[in-house]
Image (tube, rainbow, N blue to C red):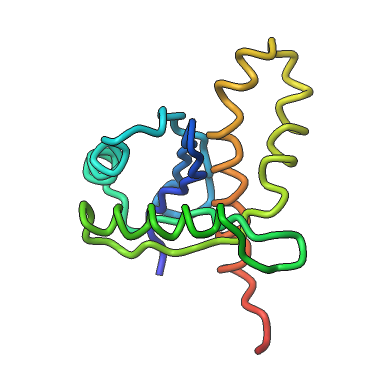
Length: 141
């Protein structure tokens, strides 16, 4: 079943958002929001405006797969989000998403300021792309 997903790259300063089309083929960076008190409300509004059916939240795992303090912040944010929305919140390993986003933006010839502005949304797009690829090719368990 195809759905419209909103990906979130949550950060304590900035939070990147990316969205896919209902056919789950095109992933686009959407916005970078300042991480403040009203963040769950702003995301709930975007969910409503964009007809989002599920959220994919980047889960910052350590390179060895273990969890750390940032993972706890993200899971706490997911709980806050669930108060404002009534759609599933799914987690996607986000290791190396920011690194990959930086590589993509490096070739765009942007100033450091412009690059920083877009980085979190591009990282969210990387998270969503990885999620959709994993969904398309389920592994044997």
